[in-house]
Amino acid sequence: LEELIDDDRSLNANKADEFLLRFLRFDHLDPNRALRTLKLYYVNRHQELDLFRNLLPSQLGHVFLRNLMVLLPERDPSGRLVLVLRPGSWNPSQVPFLDVARALLLCFEYAMSRSSAQLRGLCMIFDMDGWSYDHMTNVPSSRIKALAVVLAGYPIKNRRWDIVKQSYIFDAFFKILTPFLDATALSKIHFHGWELHKLHPHFPEKMLPEELGGTRGPLRSAEFYERLREMEASFAEESRYGIATEE
Image (cartoon, rainbow, N blue to C red; front, side, top):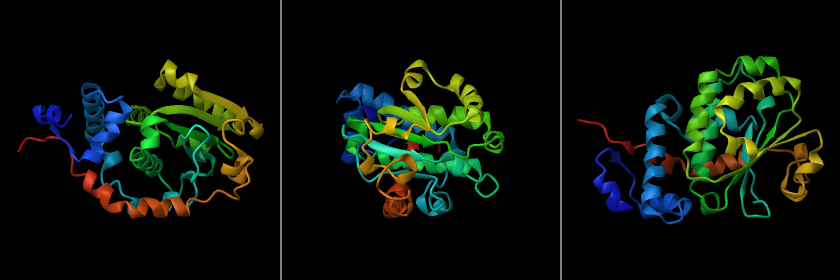
């Protein structure tokens, strides 16, 4: 893979073994496929500069400390990472949607550093309690499209999305989302309403916060945010790489 990168003058890629292994694991050790995934990752970062510029934990504490999203400390029974998001708890008057989107990207940046995400995948649980018309009007459709493209370009196997506590307002919002999702993505989405027990065959109660019918206590992002902060230097280092620019 390193030789293929050297032959591609469009790339200024991080060639550290640990970084390249993320893409090789994801693509079943096929260097040509790994190169395509790596290039897509960097192209997305280049094309969506406002999402990735200064993408550091220190810049997004106001999102995480509002408990809007957290990567759970335990994996599911299949060894997959589980990311919980609470879009209905977002206050658009206090936190711009751009910052929420950037925080989600930072979660993916963290997840892609874990071999379990590359090999076994990531699951996402969306708690839509509180989602309102005000939320809908503060989510630009252009951002949705850009975010969908960028997230699909990570070396992470997206296994399933579970959506709980959704209302008719979310149903209307989901119709806006649908054109940006391909058939494969749509097949991985599961709606449960308020029947939280339907999560538990896939995600045991002991690993879930009480908001999802679990026994871990209330959802708190502070511990996960500290893990992100510990990787600040690593995230800053990665920002040095990407699509090569002409001098």
